[in-house]
Length: 114
Length: 112
Image (cartoon, rainbow over all chains, first blue to last red):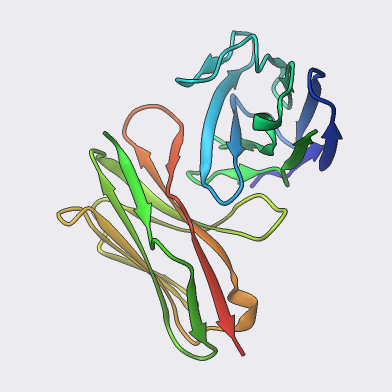
């Protein structure tokens, strides 16, 4: 299993500013995943972050808007840049340890942009 | 296009009854199908996994079926309790890549 600590748990931000979300895992993992969950909807994958390489972004998400860092095998950050109210959502990080098939999630960051 | 659809509306059932949630998919060939529970303000938590060559899986009061011909999975909670109230998500894991594709989720409320 894996335990993920994600912070902040929530934030209210002004439009035009940026927020960096941190995700710390208690074990080394190759891939970390960042998801967005808009109100009442399911999870949409933003990007996959590998240590030592550029993140791979899904269609509709770009690096300028959601830069990701992955400095080591237990840590990653996602930045939501130049925020607008449409970015209000829950952001989740996730890992999938190599020895198992299920995914583990952080508790999520509830972002409100005003 | 690829789609994963779950019960279109919230599900309300009486305590003690069996809750049945559906997950239908198109244009995927999943190697695994997984079910997660999500409580408000929390990340999803893994419940059960079923492989493409398995028809049924059980864990305590939970049962999952998987029909690759119908492209459907059913998730059953027997002897439901108010503590089972949550949103339940199905997720498909394909043979390629490492990411999951999540369904739309079903909100379940068990009424005492």
